Each structure stands twice: as structure tokens, then as C-alpha cells.
Length: 279
View 1 (cartoon, rainbow, N blue to C red):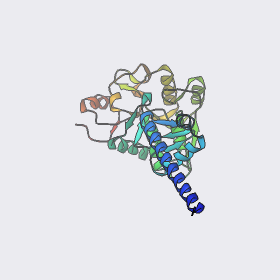
View 2 (tube, rainbow, N blue to C red):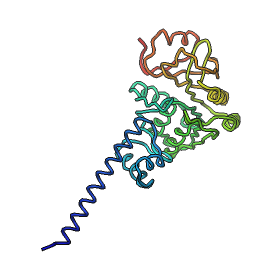
View 3 (cartoon, rainbow, N blue to C red):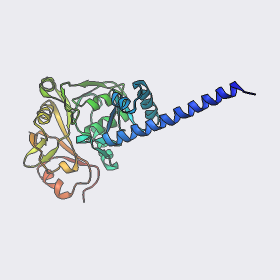
View 4 (spheres, rainbow, N blue to C red):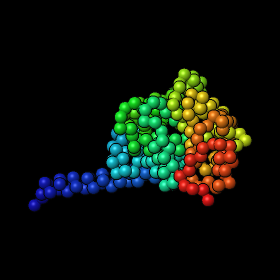
């Protein structure tokens, strides 16, 4: 005898199973794209997979709960242990790098004003701040980085200001006249800049005139300036200079730079912070 109830229940179970398989397939695609591109956008993923945007938003919420990504406005980025460099290339943050960035945060004020420039290391610093936010209100952080601003907005005790301006498709930094006009109005306690190059001969430099102009204004606005730099940037020069060593109060260098690379800066009287002792 035909049992319509059992058939109906079987159909529901099969539909649920197919739905689950499809969801896992979407999650796999999303995490693969995130690993390859550093950031994913809801509209783009929905178009690629041929599903509704709300389905992707639900997927991102699920993946965030699983600890596989961090949602930001319009999409998602990788978690703090993976940070995005130029050309959207993803770099895993070494344990020593995170130790250094945490040390930088431990020495920054918990009240007053901090300005964060744009760069993979300042983005990592923003995530470290969110993971260990101030216990009390009173700290204002200003940044021209879209990604850093979105991350920092998750810390409820912080006051976060985004500079505005033309958004660079390469670095997601806000640049141009609008950004410069806003920066010239500011006075901050500390600026943390992320130079592409830093050398004895040419000071601090960036890869483009627009990035250098913004970094120059960020340095000029602060009572104290920290350069947060990659090991590869130490001793090298990028295209456009934006500050001299005399304008910098401390350099914090990731990685394991050789003593021969660090010593010239020490000889100039520049304070250099490292995560580990140099060989």
C-alpha cells in the first residue's frame, strides 16, 4: 500500500541533504577564493555561484562562526593571522611578527588619539587592537584604511574615524586631496605609518606619489611617529620619499633582520624595536 507520509518525509530528508551538500560546496568555494584573493564580496560571490546575495550573507555568518573568516561591510576578509599585502597577495603573519605587533600595541596609549596609516602591518595592528581592546572609553583612532576602520569599528570602547578620499584599488587606502585636507586639520598623539622603504640615505618612502603625500601628512600631524616596517623595507628605498629619519621616534621591524641591517639605524640614534634578537 502506498504510504504518502513516508514518501513525503523521505523527500524532505533528501532535500535537506542536497541543501547541506550545496552549502558545503559554497563554503569550500568561498574559503578558496578568500585564500587566493584576500577578500571576498557578497555581490561578486553571489554572481559567481548563481545564488541570492542573502544566501551568501548567511554563508559568511556561518563561516565566521566557524572561525574561518571575518565579515566586513559588503563581504569578508581573512582573520588576523593572515594579512593582505600589495596586489592582494596573502601573507601568513609569522608568530614573531604578531609578537612585535602586540608589543607595539602594548606601548600605545589607551586614551587620546592614534592615527593608523595603510599597510598590511597596520591592518594586522588593527586586528590586534580589536582582539585586545581598551577596557575604558577615551581612545580615538583615525585611519585612511578602509579595512582597518571596519575592523576597529568592532571594538565598542573605541571612537573610530575614517579619513575619506579616493580609494586606491591596490591598497584600499583613501588618498587624494580630500584625504590630505582632512589630515592637515588633525593633531594626534601618535601616528603609526607603514613605509614601503626605510633607509639611512632617503628616510621613509612609499611606492606612489599619492601614498607618499598621505604618509607625509600623517607624520606631520603627530607628536610621536612610529614606523611599522617589513624586514624587506629596512635599508631599501621606494619611489617617493615622505619623511626623514629625524621625524621618526621609533622603527618597529618584523621578521629577523640581520644585525648589519639594523646597526646603521642604531648608530644614527634611532630606536629600533624587534620581536627577536638579531643574529
